Image: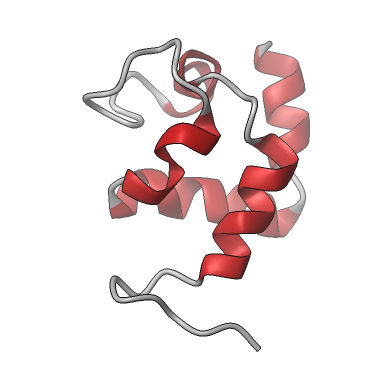
Length: 79
């Protein structure tokens, strides 16, 4: 079982997303989730570089799609 970090994020879950999709560019994810995704970060940054700093809205979107198995398909379609 995972333990929540100081900010209540489950590190092993975020780590799984980073491991599977860490090379995905923020610009690609903005095609899926809109221009406000990972606000403040350049489109050329990789997900693995900003994952732990995402706001709750952006992180929730990623987690939901990852848990339902839709994230990989959405990334492939947007790339």
